[in-house]
Amino acid sequence: MSNNNELPIAIIGAGIGGLTLALSLLKQNKKVRLFEKVSEFAEIGAGLSLAPNCSKVFDRLGVLKKIAVLSDTPQNGYITLGDSGERIHNTPFSEIENIFGYPYYQIHRARCHQLLVDEVLAHDPDCIFMNAELMAINETEDQITLEFIQHEDQSVACVIGCDGVRSAVRKLYFDETKPRFTGYVAWRALVPMQNIDAEYQQPVSFVNLLHQRQFVHYPLNLGEYLNIAAFAEQDWQIESWTEPADIEEMHSVYSDFRPSIHTLIDAIDPAHCFKWALYDRDPMDVWSKDRIVLMGDAAHPMLPYLGQGAAMAIEDAWYLAQAIANYDDYATAFAAFQRARKSRTDWVLQESRAAGERFATQTPSAETYADDKAMSTKVMFGFDPITECEHAYASSA
Ligand SMILES: Cc1cc2nc3c(=O)[nH]c(=O)nc-3n(C[C@H](O)[C@H](O)[C@H](O)COP(=O)(O)OP(=O)(O)OC[C@H]3O[C@@H](n4cnc5c(N)ncnc54)[C@H](O)[C@@H]3O)c2cc1C
Image (cartoon, rainbow, N blue to C red; front, side):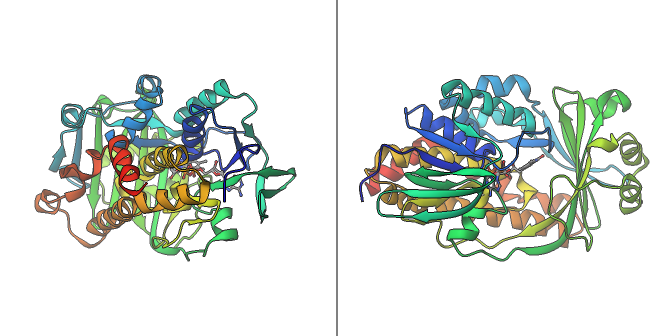
């Protein structure tokens, strides 16, 4: 079926993936409408890692320099024992730019997000519809009608679900993979940097480990904050970016960690301290049907242990935009996109699980990290989505 070019491409969800896709398509002069359920974007979330593999996409889209000036770039990534502070491994992040062409950026998600919103609106001020929570999708021969809670129906040519871990498009149109509670929770917090010791103000990312608990921290917002992400086993099952956390509970969960970790916990800004249950989902077999497709977390949500969730959504956005440019009709483009992307996202998803299992099942030692495949091979950071995408569509067109 040929494309209805009178109608816009609909993107559901203005997160990192949806915005990157919108920008890629707008740069091709496509008519795009982006539907977002929240009524306004709030400064929710904290640190987001942008590894060299996704920086290639931002570079091609002309936004990388703006991202770079808002980002911190750690020079080292130390893994230490939580009690003694003994250093058992170092990832020399300072060498990443030499090896892979781009540094390892860490940025506040809200800053990266706002930058992408501004870029999209600069191309088309009418592109984003807020307060548009998708409720139903009705498909006919030559168009698709979208129904929203509190927003008038919209006629569109095709639908791209970028609506995150609890995707409505996935639920409405594809089999819902049942999430599995992992038994682990994460705390995310920000500490104003002026409240902490100089030792923690260096451009270094720390992973402190002890008996199946991780306490990760790194500078964020150009040194304004120390970003904390802490993981531990607990039977608490709310999956949310906005559930407030109890600082006293963090003291108790990490009670046997060294005193300086507790000094950090004491310095947490309570307004920026959240708790989040970690759910795992199996890779889906099918992400595209006719003129409807999923990408990013909607298609392949992954555990956060490798910090590659946003990177996968950004790589996806590039591939999907190029598929739309390369193929005559949406259904063929979406099928080609899935074929091109599935093995990469399945692999990263499995590696993220394996990284979580390593810390959950082993007593950490230098040997534990000596064969850290995902970090030490070129496959994760060295992947070039621009070139790989060209090859993928050239061979399957
Ligand atoms: C508010 C928020 C804060 C986050 N903070 C962090 C963080 O600090 N660190 C980190 O590593 N990751 C964070 N993430 C997750 C991270 O952004 C994603 O894992 C990754 O970027 C993949 O992006 P995505 O575009 O697939 O999904 P997301 O970035 O999650 O975006 C999904 C978007 O879809 C919208 N949406 C959902 N349902 C509907 C619907 N029915 N109709 C219309 N719109 C809908 C959501 O409001 C959201 O804007 C956060 C996500 C969100 C939504």
